[in-house]
Image (cartoon, rainbow, N blue to C red; front, side, top):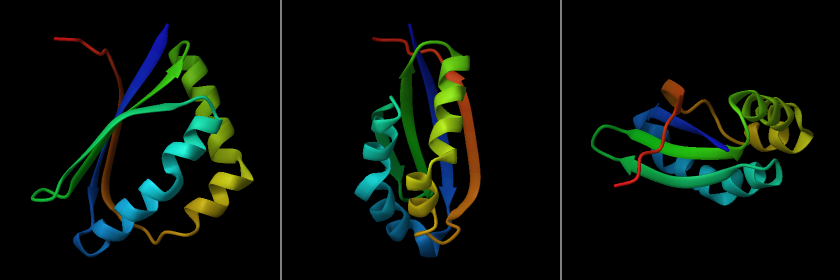
Amino acid sequence: MTTHEHRRYVLKPEMADEFIAWYRAAVPAIRARFGFTVEWVVFDRERLAFEWLVSHPGTQDDFRAAERDLEASQEWQEYLARIAPSLDELHASFVDVILP
């Protein structure tokens, strides 16, 4: 079993490019060290919507536990401190992936 979470951020216009560079530089790699896989990422520049799908083996409880470990890690805290507040909105929800 794999759990998927869809994340949608609305970025501050003046921070969009900096946020994307910050994300690309290390977020997928750091998440991978905690068992996550970034499945895809898209950015709608017109709407400043940054969306991504992240997965983790196991149940939603397993996902949440891994995320707690990630968020409590020194590596994540130090990396997070490198970016100024960039989001106007954040939406996250567990989703079912449906293949065509």
